[in-house]
Amino acid sequence: MTDVLLQVAVILGVLNAPLILAALLIWLERRFLALLQDRYGPNRVGPLGLGIVLADMIKIFTKEDWVPPFADRAVFTLAPAVIVITGLMSVAVIPITETIGVTDLNIGLLFFLAMSSMGVYSVVLAGWASNNKYALLGGLRASAQMVSYEVFMGLSLMGVVLMAGSFSLRDIVAAQQDIWFIVPQFLGFVIFFIAGLAETHRLPFDLPEAEAELVAGFHSEYSGMKFGMFFVGEYVGVTVIAAMIVTLFFGGWMGPVLPGIVWFGLKLLFFILIFILLRAALPRPRFDQLMAFGWKVLLPLSLLNLVVTAGALLLWKA
Amino acid sequence: MSDAYLPILLIFGVSALNAVFMVALSHILNPRRPTPQKAMPYESGMIPLGDTRARFSVKFYLVAISFIVFDLEAVFLIPWAVEMRALGWSGFVAASIFVAVLTAGLVYEWKKGGLDWD
Image (cartoon, chains in turn green, blue):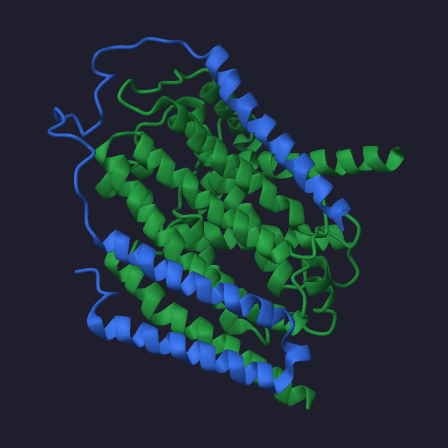
């Protein structure tokens, strides 16, 4: 009985952490971007402007929840729910420490890839159901971009699977006891990082919602909390990708002196800050450049990485 | 093993409830002030011309086709990757041939211009 209660407590804790983190990330991103651009950012509400998180939440819940009469009502409501659900479900397989974590699936890595594929439905359905030309174009771009980058996102991780010999994320972290996979799998890390940016359609790869061309892309017609859910979904996505980078390439909870949960948190924060830094530092490519880069550069590289890693491992064993 | 999937079911339930809660709460709290302008699709202030359900570039269709081919390739490579040590050199040679055939396919598509956007 206590086991079940403990399980439920862990699930609620792990599930709420990314939601609270998402709210805090909005504040963090605005403050950090402001710092990088030599301005103040939100600093009025509460200490350090942290009250803006609560103020935003109250504001967004009390805004008009407008469903346009020309939109497909059911699909229009479903689309933002999909991104929140898939984002939160991929958190389930991430091992935070040896003992903390919702579940340890033997196919944890595949589960993560499956959930990130399901996320595509959200933007496609949103773009289609909005019945707006900007939204449709944004949705099409998002689907093309996300399915393309998904191919080598999976392939780039197979190098890690080869080295660990398992899909279980806990086993993968344990396999990094001697050396973090960033060293032998540097190419895989770079490909996964770029694909992760494209999957979460964060800047510089935010072409589905490029404001200078498509207003707000696939969520042009969204407002109120439904827009807020896309926002939360995006930040949960960033958190999940950063957590996967930490788990797969940077030894997860491992580190000297400090307890595992602190190490995991520090590494996670570091990669989230890198994501924000990229937003401030990089310009947006053209859509054809993005697609060509994916298919002509990253896909051959990830295949090469796979074959070379396998060959090297077999030679080393022999 | 099925024990490991029970939390997945639970987390699906809780996150679905979360999403329903967000939609429902804003549905209860939100003010409703419809105006004729709000009922028009947003096109930067222009009166919308034509229907959204028009034709669009076939390029997106080509991307979807390539995706199916190369994602299936990944599906075949995934089980090999996890059992690579057990399969040894014969498995490596088989996987290399498979990758080589698909690379040839990629090169063919590339030369045919299937990967060029314009």
